[in-house]
Length: 232
Image 1 (cartoon, helix red, strand yellow):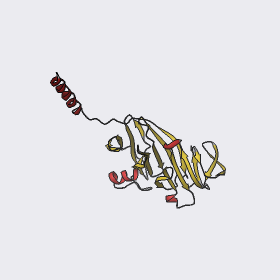
Image 2 (tube, rainbow, N blue to C red):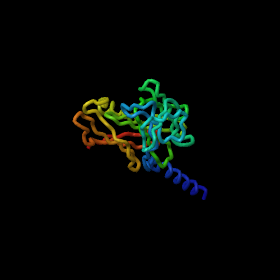
Image 3 (cartoon, rainbow, N blue to C red):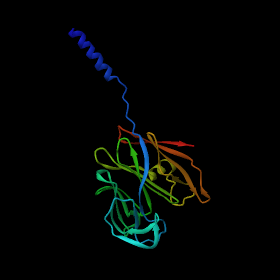
Image 4 (tube, one colour):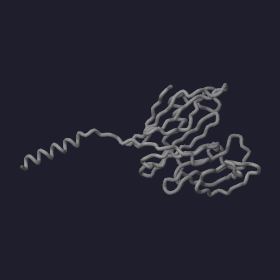
């Protein structure tokens, strides 16, 4: 009796060991625009526009005869803005009087992991079924600057995706401002377990049709995004 029970237990253990190992996919529900930071190109304003924030330490200046989202326009010279609530909120430190190319930083509270220029940027949140805080920072005016940042399970803020690095790896870095044929990227969209970023080109004759896409899928083992290009 003991021998049979032992053999049965060995069979069960072997069965468990040889079950296929599969990584659980992360599904992306939707992308939601939650805010705006920076200066529109060639704007005459006295500070940065900050919109959609839950908190802002800066002092507001009412721009004369100007509106934003159909409201009187307020700008801010220096401070910290928070987008969202709790430990997963995205923070933005800004200084209108600093070097324009390094005047806005994003990341966690007192843990900024990407520093950008002062051009206007839309902020999106990528909602997912793993409840990881993942944000998109997006600028597009004759050139694209797209970052996907987030907070890992162990609490570390990281820069997952940088469109400049994608352009360097796939297009020889050809995305400089007003470069004829320079690569441009559309805002990401969610498609089940993938994030899709389509791309096209800026030319002096006008923008081209969409040429292809990059598919980002979450690797739960590496805790990072894999990337795959498809040319249309």
